[in-house]
Image (cartoon, rainbow, N blue to C red; front, side):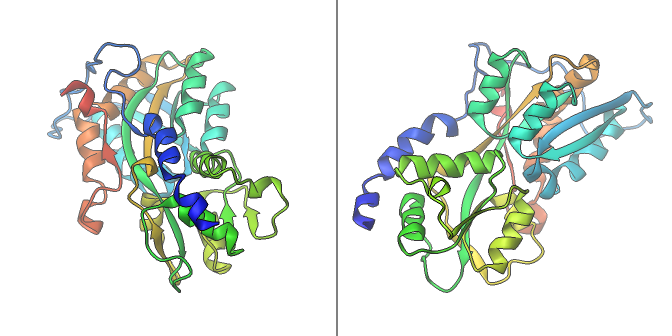
Length: 298
């Protein structure tokens, strides 16, 4: 059975190549130059007055990794705008925005983001950053470290190993389902006792995987920031189709368009991109998220 799935790697690569590659013209053929991108150089000399409070609906990965705790106080200091965060899976974050519950949305499921724009809930999507997905599991050698996520998923099913899914329509969950579909395997439809959905965030899902000696798909930033890895390690990583791009959008129904514009321009501009690229370097030796928007205006 494993030999059958080894030949499907190319199919997975083809499926994810489009989603993984950044679009340098931000989807509509013209390079976008944020009007605020050079305004903030880190040398704040005067206190900036409070301008208002924005609501950001975003994924659990940006929140759990600590990125927003790092960025938002600096943004407040430099612009006067405060940001309240609603942390959910990507599907729920987009639904919050559809219902008028947020001003800006920052998520990581490209097909869902494109549909959000197509349905008129945002004017456009902007590339902002990326990291990657990883498969984590027990360090006992049941699956040895590899770069072939297709083979790893097939082995989990074939050897009847436990797999913990977020099951919450998050960006991570969407990517997991895509991998199973390309392999023509559907454990989530077959009442497989070894396939368990948490319906919860990444942190809780990782905790369950550790408790049950099971495997799960995670973004790298959340995994690195977990205080307890138990006996778990990264067992599959590094494939091109495991890239995890994030997009940011201004919600069309927001009553705070000016503030939302300031926030998005700051995040995809020089200052925000510089800070995103710094996050995690001191502790881990590498950024936990790699700035992508600067590729569009450098």
